[in-house]
Length: 284
Image 1 (spheres, helix red, strand yellow):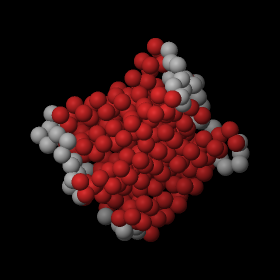
Image 2 (cartoon, one colour; image 1 turned 135 degrees about the horizontal axis):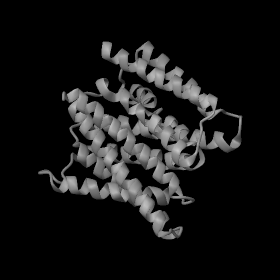
Image 3 (cartoon, one colour; image 1 turned 90 degrees about the horizontal axis):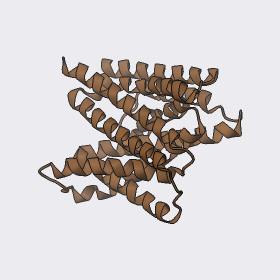
Image 4 (cartoon, rainbow, N blue to C red; image 1 turned 45 degrees about the vertical axis):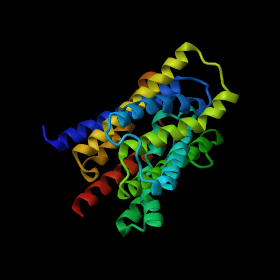
């Protein structure tokens, strides 16, 4: 098996894990996003801590990167909270698709912050992707879905900004495991005060489901790390959109959800644009 094939299989596995995480978050019931996020991040923190303790450098990091680490963690936390809110109020595949706008937001933020060049093709792809997003958001059609859909898109913006900060941190020589640890610790501590003062009682079943969401998220993180260790992003990143297929199937068979026609058109536009960008990046 070639490294590229391994990379593809790992990234598809990560997409399945993240779709499974979203399903568990939905199945955990009527709990605040802060509370759901705490348990998800606490499990991820334990895994990240184990990985760091097994490394030679342990908790060493470049102190000049601290402001960037905080910025990355803050945007990542916003992304998670918005995504969890959207999962509770939208069709599962809609929430997953709007969160997948993050690569397009990353292009914009990289241009504004990192001063990376954006070609006319990439700029056009961003515009087309947002047209696809509008098909899912359906502004003005229903306040019950438009609000949560806009929050889901905001989650995609948070994730895109976080990915941009990760790229900057990597360029500055920061280790991947420490970036993951710092983010997990930050988001867990951020949610802790809310949990202490506004805790919503949970059943044993809800707790188990949230711990399963954390395990699925950790599995997704490890799988995607293994994917990019085996192959460059330009060769395999497009396969990350298989999460939408998994989300749609899980939503249909477990939650009996069926996306409407406009949402399906939006999926096709965004996925098609992503595939076009993938081949464009391969060529250039």
